[in-house]
Amino acid sequence: MVEGILYRYRTGTAWRNLPEVCGPWQTVWTWHRRLADDGAWDRIPGEVTAAADAAGLIDRSLSVDSTIARS
Image 1: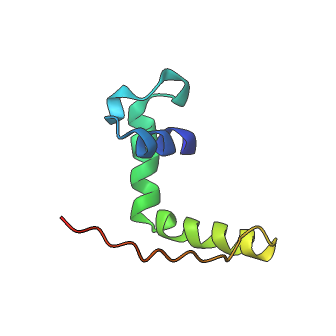
Image 2: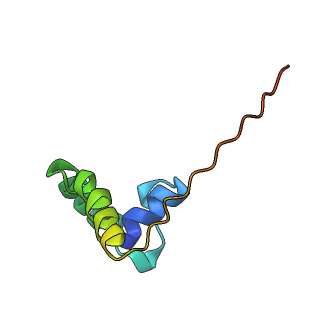
């Protein structure tokens, strides 16, 4: 289900156009709605980032570009 939801986010396709390997689009949509309603999609990025940071997988480098584009 998660792969189907992420596929839709990546491609912007309509739910009904999900590949068959993702399962029935109605089921994928239902899971998406449930996860959105209970706030799971709001919590997931923070938890994944915290786990990656704890494992030392996040690079804290900073890049600043002072380019000015005038028209």
